[in-house]
Length: 321
Image 1 (cartoon, rainbow, N blue to C red):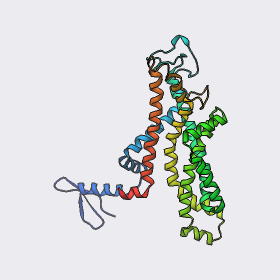
Image 2: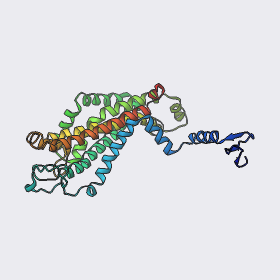
Image 3: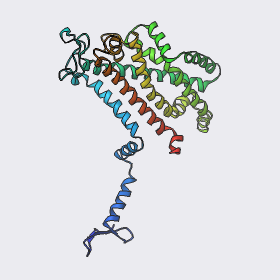
Image 4: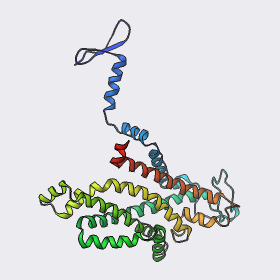
């Protein structure tokens, strides 16, 4: 154990290392800094990621802000988003109504805040549903092969032949307007891309030595697929799911704009634009500006977060940096 530090003639604090060599205060602090840098703490990792991926941190902050706004909507807003008051119809933004009111006298700020609940619920619900079934289809198709792979790929080809919005419109029109039906209508177009990514990863992983070793140990095919292959496909899946949140918000806004999305009384950013874009874009532009900004910021944040996760989880991106 090294002796305690002592004051020398120059008044500089020194210490001795394990070999008895004197260390000055400056070098002593440097050694402590180097030792602290080797400790992997949560704060240190967070600072490293913030410096390495600043735009990704901005995207994460935007997404978290929308999540907190959606969760704390009753405590943030002072007015009921559904109550109407014709006497204050098309009121301009003020201290009482920060974003003004719409043509029915409803507080636009409350409707935008509660609209975050609708958009995020649809985005996360559709993404989770699409990822769940897309993973099952892709894993079964890539691991089993044969007629299972051939059949599922032809169905996926037919789904992928249609644009996402067109397919979502067809599903929404067939199912009818409701919150759950909107989630299903947006989740179905997500299946082909997710299933193809999981299938491609599974095809490359099923011939790996660790899979052969697990098979030689007598593990069942289902256990091998779920325990050994599926965890190794999570990195591209996380990136794809995060990037898909922005497209889900856009599709939900588009469906609501066309009258096929979430019906009343749920506030929806897309329906706000649909109700105001044609008649009030000149006389009451705030009815278009604020819902449009909400959609833009939400999609922008999810895209930034998805790009940062792609760079973080892609080994080729890490080696190139």
